[in-house]
Image (cartoon, rainbow, N blue to C red; front, side):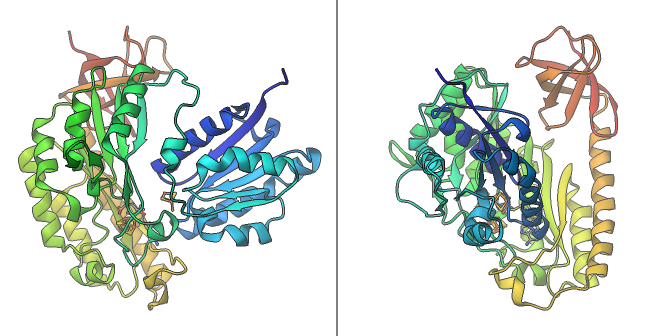
Length: 440
Ligand code: SAH
Ligand code: SF4
Ligand code: F3S
């Protein structure tokens, strides 16, 4: 038998890309590839790319340039670009960077084996179709390796919301939900392989409406089905849109013990004028009322958010409205970005904010969000939380895991294995993590 070929995958962007990279590795595993952590000894390099902001795409081009020497040394090395930059600029990548042998969009990963074979014949291959067939079905039944305690599971893809700044509806296509039975089969399989916590993924995960035995299921109904899976201890989901936050999902946060008290609910901005121009179809007020209802269902829930500053025509007053909203909501964690013009999106054509003003606003917003994050984290001290251990720590006997609220927690003198859940009392709060001790 010939030695296995080596595959190096580098993943950028969101968790869906992490999930997709795993599936691509499995698909090529069937063709005799094993993963390597170094590009230097790879027979194939795949960059799984993100197009959400300008720098994300630029990074890909500079990374590709760095493989020039490697390819000169190893003419058989194949280089592929996958993900959202591949979808958006596939042909341009092929033109601009002759090193690239293969371009594959997010909806065509199941065709990778055939594409790889063609590159071995010396062809250049580009596939950025939105095919009819179900790529997830074609990607299943791959070698079943043991897994760590946590996993992502894509349940919904694409987006029909068309926020004025965003490329996702163009790179991932229309919103599609996977049928519930396939998700449950995949979840059971993950649990058999050692997984204890599953994060359900979708660009608009709470718009989930996959087929069930008696009609479509909501995300909450899917969560209740997953709740019945023995051995699965924790369920999370991301990313949600405020407009799809239905009553049964809010209620599940109060009643489903496996559903963790953490919700990523991006608002983007606090000014109604800007929200309208962003095509967000919610107001600051409706978002705040929604958070109140969610907290009424589960008072200790940790709220996470996404923000964009410097969206076209944002004034200082508009920005202040974002700061006010943040003060009111109080976020446990958040991601904030300077608006980045994306070609082909409606906002790209509008008058842009002075970049220095946008930088200044971003700094002020981030200072506030960091302060809040710190306060919420420090507020955990003295509390009892569940922790799912994921790996050993740097100190002897130490284990590291995630709390119910997704904080990293270090526990000393801990006679537990990865994959075990424990009750832990938080004793101190550090820069980016908590320390705790086992209870009982
Ligand atoms: N589907 C999710 C996430 C989309 S992308 C949602 O609807 O929330 C993740 C985040 O990137 C967005 O929430 C937004 O805050 C940010 N983002 C998207 N496009 C952007 C752009 N053009 N410039 C800056 N930030 C952007
Ligand atoms: Fe992008 Fe808006 Fe869709 Fe989120 S809801 S993926 S921000 S278009
Ligand atoms: Fe990026 Fe595509 Fe995800 S643009 S954020 S990799 S959906």
